[in-house]
Image (cartoon, rainbow, N blue to C red; front, top):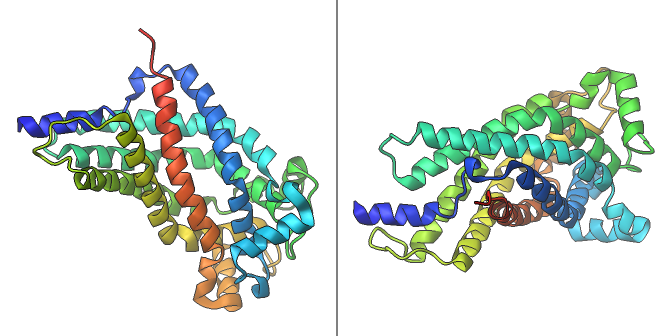
Length: 321
């Protein structure tokens, strides 16, 4: 029992609780570092989105071909379409998401403290619940931003509305559909992405636990992992979590993306059913995995860089004595 406590404590040192953070520094540093991370991964999001919305003949083209096509015809600005709007618009959303994540996780850790769970299980449950609650809260802000950014990403493609910028997107969507037009796919996002977020954090915690064991951190181990080991394990676990999540959530993401950006599915407002039927008619069941390659790459890299960046932000934001 003593050994188990030592091991749990050693791994717990990698997690910094909400009450130990300087909140202002946490959000300022987080805004800067996550914006840099988003810039590095934005091209994969553009390629993925355009593949999901493309005509049937182009939907099976490899991601690298789509990437080269965008570079050839639109240059660097083409693979960064929508980034300015995303970068600026995401700042309030990140404050909301990170705050709700950390507060929820801190509350769950306290509520489960008296339960007779192994430490890895307790931390995994707390992270999973926190990830789900954070996603539900932040979806209220992020879904309209997602609609705007994705419409900018697919400018020039058939069956999309031409817009000159983010405010033009808002004006045209609201004019035709009202404010609800900015919340296309909100129900689908809240219902599916919230469990997916819980899955991501759960997979991350499970992967991290398995990796620690594979490195020899068993019940008999008292030695604490080094800083390099912590970063390596967190990065690897984040990549595994992102990869697992992309395999499970890509079909829903394809439907959601098309629902948010395409406008000509017949009479009336686009719906999940209309979008699903059109996708099945065009490509069959494989159509739900349009853009899977870029999304797999995006989520794997995002999982790796996000968790390393996130843990770095927390270490840099510890309250000074």
